[in-house]
Image (cartoon, rainbow, N blue to C red; front, top):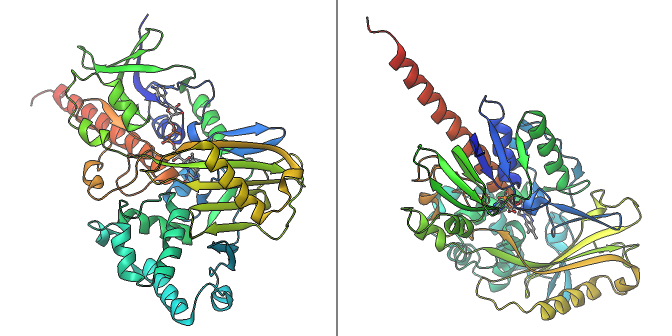
Length: 439
Ligand SMILES: Cc1cc2nc3c(=O)[nH]c(=O)nc-3n(C[C@H](O)[C@H](O)[C@H](O)COP(=O)(O)OP(=O)(O)OC[C@H]3O[C@@H](n4cnc5c(N)ncnc54)[C@H](O)[C@@H]3O)c2cc1C
């Protein structure tokens, strides 16, 4: 028998679950289809030998819209904020990171003139209205505010930290500055990892009647003759939905829609470039250097942070969970073994002898952090979640006009749910008007 639902959500990550949370307040029937056996998408946390490994370093902006949306739907977020301090590695030399006023005036990274220029850059980030930067790349903006190469190099490093994007010449300045402003408001590392958000979202979905179906791969989608969307699963089963919210990646969405279907956004979606990186997730019985908690390299796109210093990420509080990360440029050739070697040597420098204390380690050479590297002009195409195919809506970390990462996944999930709810209200209102007797 063909299943028929008011709402079919494709994808069980943050975007899909947030959409489900808002729609579950209506009386529409909802199902969520996830191709994986486990739920959560890229917000998954794996428990490996009693340690909680997020898929690479994950931090939630404290002042971002994602946190307030999650709180609005009753998700509790437990964790702590890392101190914005640590070291900057430049040409293999370590310097105190100039992130606090004291460190700014004591670090040997900068000359006096560069110090003043850096202060100017920080003030510019805080005072700039991102809306005004819609026509600029991050590189163009950086060249205006930071004439010195050294200061600009630190600005790009901070940009990578806030956005995960390592292509300032391609990236929209508007999104970069929005993320930098958010990052300067601080972040949270979550106790138990990001899966704690998914677990709560999942429980809430189940208890409000959402039918969650893991291990269901949607192969194809098309408008049906009855005016609904028809989804064809990999096992041949067909599911009908009055509305579909697709939270897969943009290329996956294009593949699901047969070329015979007219889809005006196809071309735009096909040009989206993902933001990628390599992650080395490590659990140690102890840190050889207890004081070395955070580092970034300005000459190479490398990151290191001990997340367990702030969040509970192990059943044994003495253990340390850290992430070493490399930001990939979109045109870069990825050679896994060379990158692994590079990340391990970076960690050798920061935590000499770490290999003797390993409980678990995991290396992922090429993971998609965000499905869209935000570029100039994208936002005009992403103003609404509603696509040109009736009943088909989009959400996910690529589908928001002005944000990326969890900010985009969560806000676009909410937006898709609100647009559908509004559409339903309008339709019900019009039906009611039609039924009113003529006087
Ligand atoms: C290494 C790394 C570090 C990150 N760090 C941060 C950070 O610090 N801060 C931050 O805000 N964000 C961070 N992110 C990004 C954040 O994790 C993602 O933006 C967010 O989880 C994406 O959620 P989503 O729902 O849009 O997509 P996903 O989580 O990818 O969910 C989409 C789901 O759709 C499913 N699916 C796909 N195709 C089909 C199909 N055909 N049928 C059925 N199901 C399908 C997938 O299996 C997946 O579960 C990081 C990501 C990574 C990988």
